[in-house]
Length: 468
Image (cartoon, rainbow, N blue to C red; front, side, top):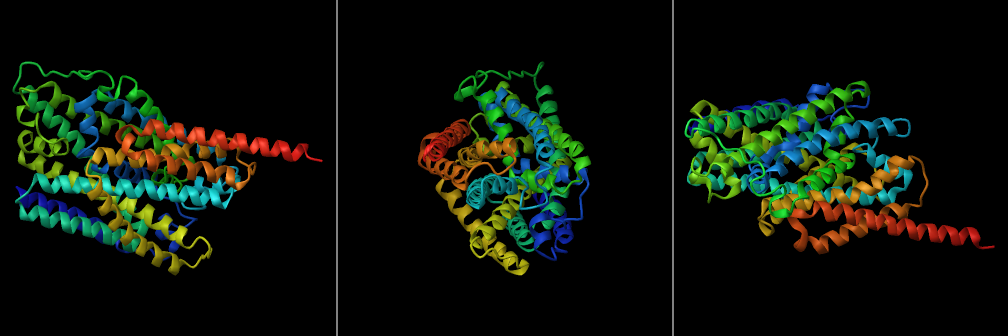
């Protein structure tokens, strides 16, 4: 069985990698995935977004929410249904002020226009911090996968080959390669979550007269409190207005087709979260049926469920899908980090030479993988590292929201840059205390920092106007 999964995974990965390794001919294709006069189908973009947004969540995060907190998994899933359509409103509001194909993920150009280059630079650095941390969490998920199959040499081989191949095609082909691979991997991921939920439900119903489904067994918010899932869902939804991994794909879709694309993504991810959270709830609600999993590390629960609930052909599909899911997130985050690091490193030079930019992006990709591995070693709790990293988007939301409201040059550059740098510094200092619940404090820190700086700006402006 393990050999079959290895072969199936490698075949899918090889097909996707060969397709992607046709490569990017220039910098525009490397960072944007297509030339300015090209667009991609909404279905193609939707599957790619789905793949990069889910990935390793089949192994950690979502099942844990189901086990620990019940309703939280569904609430976070609902955030996508709320947040993604909001992106359409943003895109329509700013379309007369900025071409989304400019810059690296659309709204970064708007921040530069409303505030200035220093604010844009701070935004890039924050995004780098986010995705290096998330990349570390994805590598931790690979470690969980390997640990579950300790002693299976072929699994070690497929993981090494898989992660290595993911790095190489991302390193060489940029976003164009990522899009090609994510399309294959995303389809497999979606099928995986449906098959796993169905298999677990059928297994439980065959061993008990009535399957228990106590969604709020530990309270609405579980150990984080009753309001956590609601407030966290709102916070997550708001971050979508600044997420590069979303904007860098939706900007490639023709404007009249973006509506269909984002609704497909919203519904698909909600189904994904609901399915995977239900898996966790079923395990928690039926301890007699799943007795062997009650003391199993949370990151290993989905994998062990597959082994004793699904027939062999479905095991091959689901376990291959989990591995491919990890790789589809690694390539997306690695591409974002490498492109933004290349831009930041060459910021002062202002170079537009495509070959120089691609060379720097490839060096950055290697460096980012090394840093991500270091983070994975230093912070081995996957959920905490993931949550703390993604929380940084909370401090970006206020500044991006202000640019969307204003849409024109209204403030000096420091008004946008200072809150971003200040918020990042506070989060880094507070990381040991916040971790898994840092989404909510992060967005508050961002708003407080922005309001303080706006107040200082208004006082300075008032004094300037009143001076003779």
